[in-house]
Length: 405
Image 1: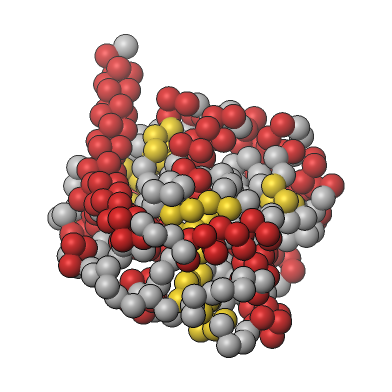
Image 2: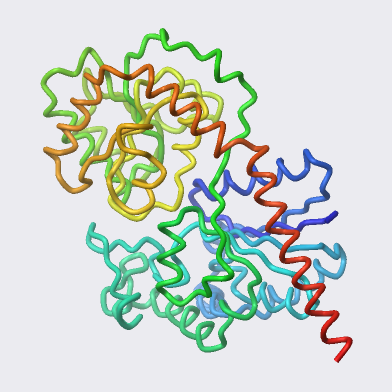
């Protein structure tokens, strides 16, 4: 394997998916593999008139213009494998057909649940909703699940429905990468072929010697890092924190931005809560290394938050919601603690118990051990290239079989 084409549609607000793309690109290049990134950005949508916006919405189902552009890119580069991270909305599933036309194997990372949930989150009215898995996609149109709009939800339902009918997900993708066993089972439940799904977690390139991280570093705060939005459960965290009587002289630091930041900072900022906005990666890792715990209070089915990998990379345990993949990635009373995501008193109780946890030094050692055995770039490189090699071999065998018939 010599050449890999990464494909990614950036959203207007950056997130964990973008970090994963950058990490995997750097990882492959560092091992001498030729890597190119084919990308588009949703910012371009803002500059379009109503007619073009309508066209973009329709092309989310299957884009002829992107099909032609990507096919030309494939001919020019001739990659051994194409790895798609996100195709929505501008690239569309036409990427798979362009690759298939040229007999180039395709790998798709399943960062979210877009293939079965138009909102991609399994979240409606701040509660987990799986009606489009157990029932009809019409549920999402009725409830305006995408951006609270029935009109904007229709093209996504059309995209999912048409490509289900064409069996795009089953026939045009050679391998899916699920980030956890939980998400793998969800996708199997929705109809993706089990034999095409493998589990590969996210990772981080951390060059420092974890054994040198001292347990004697004074821990003066607990930490939240991420988007400040409803599905992240930040308000629940802040409300619970407000009611903890003995905070052990700790502060709660909130790193990140989002649509709820202004409201929540006015409501909760005070002597023991600090909102510090977005921070560069090196600064985030510094915050994490000096934090007692990382808090992940999400109320939806997270994929695999990069923040947890980042926390593990500096030996910091995690307190998180007992929901979806989180309860798999964070082992209760081993690498952190779980709380009931929609129960303020339980969040309060668990944080209080964590602040008083007597075996904290041994928990940090376990976090470091889990990181070194699961989330380093060396381990991830082998997992990723094994996936690539397997689909390349399958495609070659398939082409050979066609020739000999």
